[in-house]
Length: 626
Image 1 (cartoon, rainbow, N blue to C red):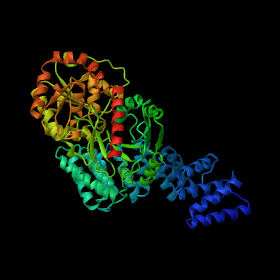
Image 2 (image 1 turned 180 degrees about the vertical axis):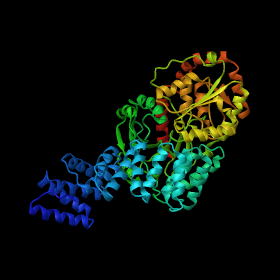
Image 3 (image 1 turned 90 degrees about the vertical axis):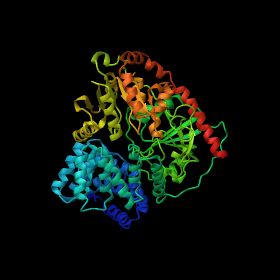
Image 4 (image 1 turned 135 degrees about the vertical axis):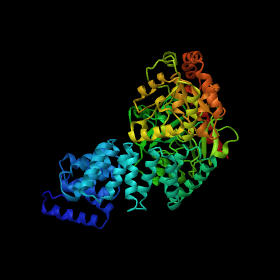
């Protein structure tokens, strides 16, 4: 602890406060050092002990303020720097975590190693996996048996897309640590990230047999089930029951309750989402929330993933209150939501990263609804409804859900036109002399059955090519495995082009080089379908047996383009051949398609906002009268 020079009386007072800390009476220590710092406001020892007391009392925000003041005043006490870095990490202030931790690197022994560990963690969170991996390797050189840093290395390898390397490291460590949950989950993620869907699902299922309460494993399996055509609707329902059981092992099942409100009062809508940013959710929400500014709805955001960007800055003025909540546990978040007097709580995360599904079991709002973020059932206790449309969940398909189905009148989603200067161009076949099929969907959606069908399409259209683009293709490991999958599916690899990520304007310009977009299954495209149609590129889709499979179908219906919907795989190939053999039709369609889709309900934010507002009011009244 600090050793700055103090007078004898203060030394005795500090010692009394330290006794409180050593006795783990942190709340008393906070009050004691708060009084002492009022008497000695510039004394670093007093301030440092106050920060330590706040940190030990789980008052992380308050501790951060005091640690920051100490740092600005020149304090560099090793133990305090270590605690300040840990505290900043808890608050997801990873730049500050790194700044504190790097001060420990010139030291020797445990403090240096702890500094390296925290630097690695912070750099990874800051999106700098290469630097984070370098810090990990330095610790391994100095402490070869450090298991903690090995686990961090796995995380950085995954973030760099080096799934094979991450999986290899997991398999090297698991014989020594066979029951380590972090490693077991990392192995699952390595399989999924690397495109090995079959092994990822098998490892997830095995993990849940031994750790059925693992919410991390249930979420991962629930998310990746949507990509696997072997997983039936019934299997997803069965998994939803396991999710509910895992949640109720950790959270209470609080009974439903009601809030008395007159029909004309404003409804306070809570949004649990970390994706109001450059993300598909952000693209669908922007136009809607802008159009609802003068409505009877007001929004409160609870953001579990503060990955803010320029689009986030455009959302924040559109909401009444914005809470960043990654540091809150489920009970605390539930209490915050209740304190905000939310009338309808919308879950827009589903099984996605950062989800807070256990929160709904605490019943923080009288009406709780799943919408948009995940197209399927989660089984999370406390979620009453799922908000859909008549086309992605037609009458008779309600058995897919644990939740009660509630329908918007026309479309589930409303897309915001991209803020990109990109005039529609003629189809490239007119210049190339051959058809280019394409997909900008997440490559994880391109399972073996999808690739086999698309290989038949290329075989049936002589000279045609396939252009695929996605963020996964930045990884050489992933590209190598994916090309093997293409070869197994029957593709001539010389007719397939794989391209990696790009900023949004350049990503969308890829459509200038595509004649016909192909939609995958069972996880069809929503964002990619809307973007392709806006770009003037028609999308060939296929009817499916579940909501996630019908998302593109719903969008085609909304845009009046059902001629591009195939009945089955044979019809999919037949339609691909028919449209590919008619370049003049593709030219005519391309010239008018953007105007057609912009005039459709898919892009009509004002109309959708009115329907959305009316639907939520009807839902609220129904729930309270039921």
